[in-house]
Length: 132
Image 1 (cartoon, rainbow, N blue to C red):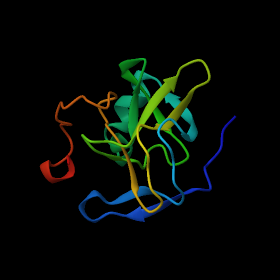
Image 2 (image 1 turned 90 degrees about the vertical axis):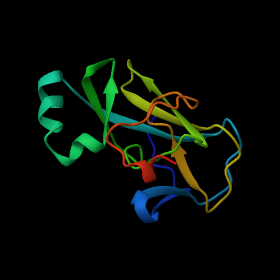
Image 3 (image 1 turned 180 degrees about the vertical axis):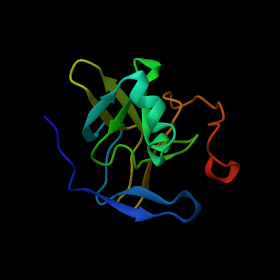
């Protein structure tokens, strides 16, 4: 099942650009969103790297293939102190986003782009001020 959650909205967040904001409270563990993906092979991913899609594509199974996440999935901003996490379901070709902690209505929903909430590895293409 895929859905775009009616309890989410897009909002501008200064230097971070567009992001996703909660319109209701989420409890830790709550499902935020299930996003379908468009999986691209290594040749297509190479092409995407030359376009704006490079900033929105997730690795998929390997660093050579990728997925373009639909719904709000490619709009969540990065944080080293995220309030949400994402998991890939390769069989169903979806990304699932869940609350790591309670999230209040009006709060931005963020994920760690490194894939693990506590991975502090710098994200090479983000500027320093965008790696809060």
